[in-house]
Amino acid sequence: CVITTGAKTMWNGLGRGPSIIQSGTIKERLEQAKNIGKGVLDAGSVLIVGGGLVGTELAGDIMGFSKKSGKPMVVTIVHSGDHLCPEFDEKAAKMVQKQLEGNGVNIFLNERATETADGKWR
Image (tube, rainbow, N blue to C red; front, side, top):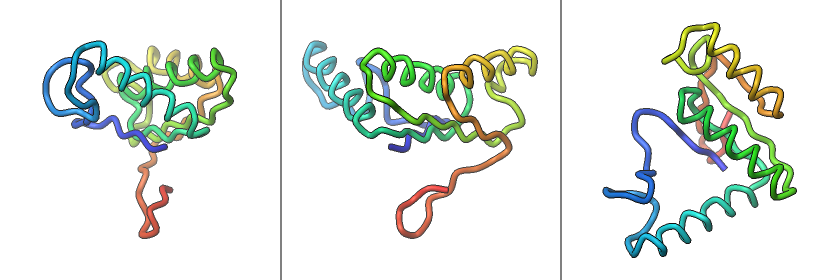
């Protein structure tokens, strides 16, 4: 499973606007979101492209749900910057990185993920 968390995302929560969640009542959209989450856990591995606030929070959430569900996951963040969370100073970003790595998240800094011609990511 590949999740990109750059400037544009298809996820607008349960609110308004275009999203991977189809239309319906709030209850129906919540059920759709749960199904998407189940699909992510069933994937077994997740590559998160982008180590900003959204990417790091998502990585932590996925690892937490993985442990809670008993489904082992490999979660990897690829981030083009020299530290996670560019919104934070480097010291705070290092604390986020240490916490994520302590929970089993693989982190690659100063790297870019690219899709190959056969649809794989490197």
